[in-house]
Each structure stands twice: as structure tokens, then as C-alpha cells.
Length: 391
Image 1 (cartoon, one colour):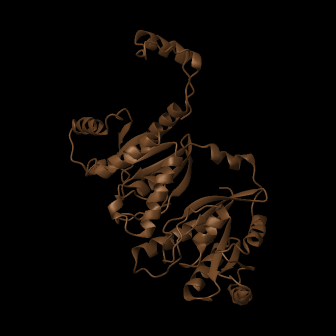
Image 2: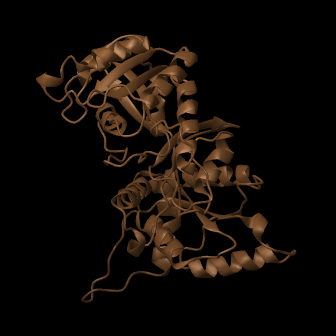
């Protein structure tokens, strides 16, 4: 499993801000709204030769009125199970609350190493307010100002004592293929990740747009080894009304830019929509490999010709970029899920294949000689050799 540090706590105590500091990124959405981080967000951190993964969890909640709050609670419990070390974040300005007590009880039962991080110690007047958190009986308390970074170094110095020294096997993730799962909201992206991994790494509900952040998962099974990224659903610009939704779409676009291959999901029951085409062309514009997954195929009434007709119509709509693999899947029944991975790996291999200049010359120069480029001002262009450019 490696070194995994999980940040847990009740909503709005500053977990995502600390996550961004530890990973030196802005991967977790930070906003003064309770419950912004709905899924577990994975990032990478490094300190004094130690490399570790950081999990930013949704705020722990015990009230079941909101469907997301119940799902967040389950996600936190899963993150605690995975973690090597837990950073329990609390707020010195509000002190110990009922939900803090509930989280503390959960952590005591986990028997995992815990460091209490008392956030919002933003000035000298607040130093000392954190002493009440020793009553949890979970160990030392570390003062922090997640906003200005004060105390971060002391926390990291203490945290790495619980971790294993980084070796080269940890660094290999940087060279793994990166597969991004993209598509409109509610086409089944998170369900696909869960089908691949066999566990609920992402919150899955019937409500559109439940994945607000990009989720990184390493998949290593059945001969496959790659990083899988589930992005927030990309919406039409007119529908991006909340700031949080805007950040999520922005991050999804960035994920496409950083991916090697995009698994592009569409809803079989709805067909290819205008927004689907926008996403597809965004992938093509960034010169990424792509596999089209026609999801929810189990919901379509069909006979022996339906798939062939559907594929032919789809390729016509995707023209001129219609030479991509098209797989008909169902994340519910896991139909052709393995085939989707095989196709993605083949696309990645083709995308990274290096063709020697001599082989390119053998093929291309004969074609150029047979159909030479037109003369410019009476002069013919002489092509001496052909060389492959990097993707």
C-alpha cells in the first residue's frame, strides 16, 4: 500500500487547504462551504526524502438528512482503513464539538497512528487554545495555520517518523500511463472506477454531478498497471453556475491535458449529445489517445443488428476522427469492462510507439515521390527524410 496519510475531521476545518499545502498543489477545491470535498482526493507529497500519498476526505458527518453527508461518512471510514497515518484536523476557534467527539471515537477504534492538527492558529493570541484537544487521548497536538502555512514543517517532521523511507518502487508511479475517465455528468464515470477497483472509491448516487474533484487511483491487477483519473463531469458553460462547479470543470479540462489516454464515456440510452462532441473534440485538440465507451448498454433494447448500426452511426457523427476503438459497456453488469482496459492499453502503446527514421523513409518517401508536393514559384520541394515527432 505504501505511505498513505489521511486528513480527516468534521466539515470546514481546513482539510483541503492543508492537503494543498502538503501536496504543493490546488487539487482539492477549497471554499467556505461545508461538504465541498465529497470524495477522497489523492495527491503526492515529499519531505526530507520521504514520499507519501495524501488523502483529503470529505468532512465527517453523522447526520443522515443529506444523502451526500451519509456517503461522505462512508468515504472517511474507507480512507481511515487505507491510511498509514491519520491527521485529525480540529478548529481552535470553535473548540471541541459533538462531531469532533464522534470522529475521535472512530479514530480510537481504528488503532491507527493519529496526529491531532489544531488549525486556525493564525496569530500568537491563539497559541495555547489547542491544549483542550489533548482530552481526546489520541496523542500530541500540533498547531497549524493552514492559510499561511505556519506549523506545516513541524507537522511533516513528526509525520515522516511513521512512514517508510522512499525507494525507487514508489517513484515508478510517475512513469505509469495516465488514463482519464471523462464525459458529461452522470454518464457513469465514478461507477466505472468502482467497477475497475471493486470498491467504492468514489461516491456514486443517481444525482448528476456528484464528483466535484478529480480522483487518482492506481490500478494494478490482471496484468494492467496504470493511474486512473475520474474527473468531474464536464458541463455546458451555461450550466456552470456555482463557483465550485466551475473549478471542477476547469480541473477536468486540466486532467485531459495531463492524461495519456482518455476513456470517453457517453450514455447509450441518450445517444451522442452536443456536449459529448465538445468533450470529444477537446480530447482530440489536446492530441490524446481516446477510447469511446458507450455506457449503459444494458438499458438499450436491441437485436443482433443494433450494435453494428449504433456503431456505424456513431462513427459517422465522430468523423473525421472516427478510427477510435468503440466499446459497448455497462458499469452495472461490468459488461466488457476488461475489454475497455485492453483497448486503452493498446491505444497507449500505439501512442508511445517509436518508429525509426529509416522505416519512415522506406514508406513515406516512396509515397512522396509518387505524389510529390506542388511546385512553389517553379521550384520543387525536395524532402530528404521523415522523422517522428513526440506525441
